[in-house]
Amino acid sequence: MFGLKRRSRTTAQRPARGRDIAVAGRRLPLTIRENARATRLTLRIEPGGKALKMSVPVGISEQEIDRFLHRHHGWLATKLSKLPKANCVEEGGYVSLRGKPHRIERTGKLRGVTEAIEIDGEAVLLVGGAAEHLGRRIADYMKKQARADLELAVARHTEKLGQPAAGLRVKDTKSRWGSCTSDGRLSFSWRIVMAPENVIDYLAAHEVAHLREMNHGPKFWALCKQLCPGTDEAKSWLKRNGSSLHAVDFNS
Image (cartoon, rainbow, N blue to C red; front, side, top):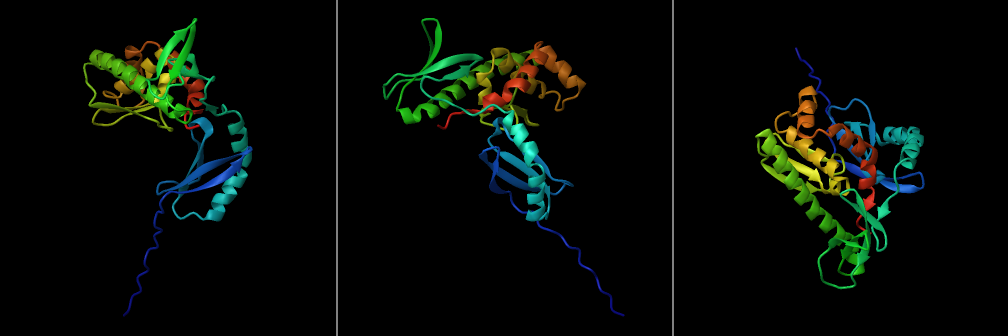
């Protein structure tokens, strides 16, 4: 007697792929990533409205993805219209540092450090170097300021907690403002330095609280408020204004 064994069909998960789509008068990069656990298609606007991300079940056809995008075109256009427009840093313009707008002024010198000063009562960010390097030099300055502020805040909160962090780094994350790994390494978006000082302090306290509570349950929030009594106010500010910080373009 012969038997026929039916071989199960499996669909390999493809690497993330991308395309550009036109929405509300702009072209945005769309990253499509297959997720073995996904049962439906989900679409997300990246902070600042500069890109889109899509999670889809494994093996889904391009035609179904196209139909999904077509159905949600109106939703995308409405959401994007409510986001702040990209704010390009340029001479004579303004950039926020610790919640305070600073007028950008080039020194005209090819050398020299970037520094925040006050001229006739106005906050000014003096930037040296060639004009085409203006955005990069400001971003580099912001990263250094963010690291300095966050290191001080983390040291203060970890001392209060009685539990040190294993490390700290700053980067330009889009999906979250901070993170804490299981081995105690903290990461932050350097763009937080554009927020008011109490918001910077809250973000540091938030991630430090994760050193003890790796969740967002009641115990975590109680600990977060213990470290930073102004948690609710700062959290609300970040929810209202976070997209505007991501919308600042330092690459112009």
